[in-house]
Image 1 (cartoon, rainbow, N blue to C red):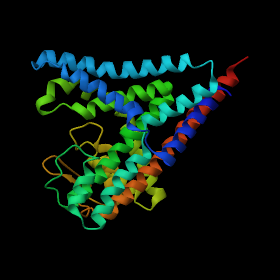
Image 2 (spheres, rainbow, N blue to C red):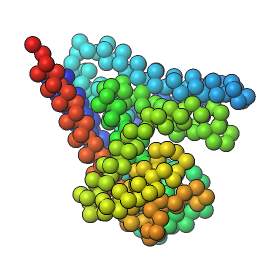
Image 3 (cartoon, rainbow, N blue to C red):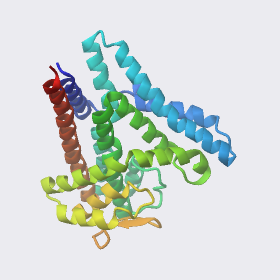
Image 4 (cartoon, one colour):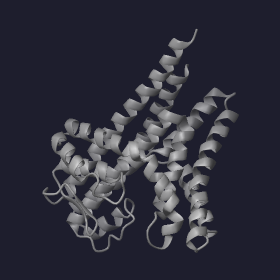
Length: 316
């Protein structure tokens, strides 16, 4: 099996595992290990701005290096046993992206709102967003769920697959480590100086994936009965409305595609002029996410498979 075919097989198997079984147990989940590493490093963080920034810079580099280089070394170690290496690659790559878990989290909010159970929806939404959900009414609960599903199309699926295409399993895990740290400490409030490096690194890493995700979501709109024209218009008009240079791109595309206005009070409005979102829009956003994820997987498989084909042609 040539390198391109091998990489495509790993991706296909990882996607099947994700859709069929979801996430690995917590005790053996590499992303959980990433979080534990960063929590331990955070306990050592100084409080003064400059020392906190330098400590945060070390944290931002530590995760990608430990998990990127660590996975590369581990895969090299087991390379004499091809089946073991294949299984390990599938396991590690699957841990770097999460289609089923994201869909399940979004649908949990959908079911609660569909049953008009706002307290249950607020509780379910906590698995998707870090903001305070206690005062959110149904339209804002639906908006927050749609926003998170859209944004995580990039963070949890497209970006890991893109880094897999560029740098294999180590690349996907290095990206996931950087993104996990940004989600944990951010760069506002008490942790502003500690989180600045992680936030900026995450911004840079997601410049391409966020825009690719928006484009894939536009295509998904065409496949799923939403409006690709409105998705493009909203992406163009509102994509830069968020504080993040990246998060607004896929969120605005989904807002336009669904014809809804997504508001985070005091921060932004996306899809301005659209109707208020409801429970059904969460379900439709999940369908768009799954369709875009499958398109991303197909593009990744075509790229890595084609790379192997090109190498074969170039060989004497």
